[in-house]
Length: 114
Image (tube, rainbow, N blue to C red; front, side, top):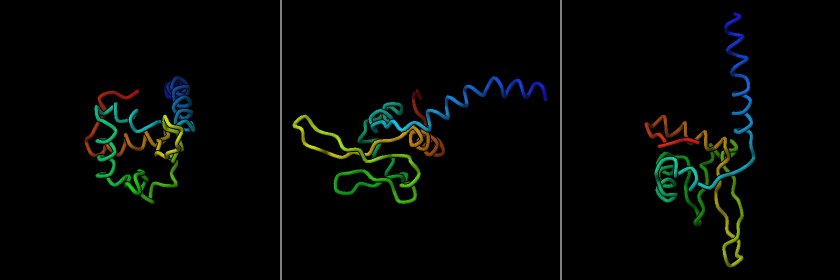
């Protein structure tokens, strides 16, 4: 029991750190996730579509309904170089972890994971 308690104490800071990352409200563009897999955003979006995670409607990627309320991604409004607004799907850390697990379950692993 003492050895297990020591292991738990050593792992606790790591667990808290990872929990804080997953709970973060910061988002990332699909390009950032795709690079871990050595893919372009276009190819990676197509892969997520083939896996039944997202679909495209009116030029915007959306999560299928069963994933929409999980906190995996947000539709974010940005502005192009002409100041015109556009919307894009951006992934949360929780979503990045979800995508990693979904793809790993299909034998698709990143080249590196930061």
